[in-house]
Figure (spheres, rainbow, N blue to C red):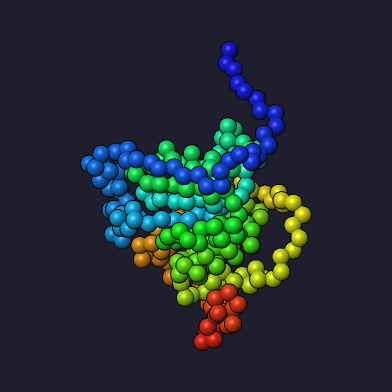
Length: 281
């Protein structure tokens, strides 16, 4: 007769976890096998594997979007750091890269452990158990990222990601899904071009009081689609091969596909705008 362990309740989050966790992973394949490993990727005419190996990516959000994005990037060979202030809950287990054993652990720390088996070359991964705002303050002296990715539903966290991209003059790929679980959108903030506040001006309004976490619908299928879109946008920015002639794209399961180019908003308080351009698509 088989046995199983039943966990009745999520364990409380522990305060003994470090704020920053680091994993240094050695090469697991010899040089000949590593060449074979990237063969399919390098058959793409625009692919630059060495550029990917030299890149460091900061993924803000380690949940349903950040998890599959980070896993795919480390499989491709890109070192990726994670930022998230949440801990793993039971409701995460049906669509995020966590196990029952991870309940109560900081999301970025647990995710590091869960994606590390997919790495195939030497790299160091770091998990920052803190808010995006705290990360922006504590990491100022040693930030050396080539690109940021934000897969969160918090306007404040997205605004912080936008500010990091502007301050460091690096691209930021924003990805989100609709509340009905049927659509996703990618927006790419590029240096000197339209910023997240040009695209979504209301993020600059005073924040409203937060009355607990809103339990919006979520399902794994659209999250996987969104993560794939984000990864293509990230590697495209790194390799100088943009995902397309746009900076914003909406996709839906029923078949809607809309691309547009968001222009700088005149007088944008975040990026300064450009009075020679008009906003809109």
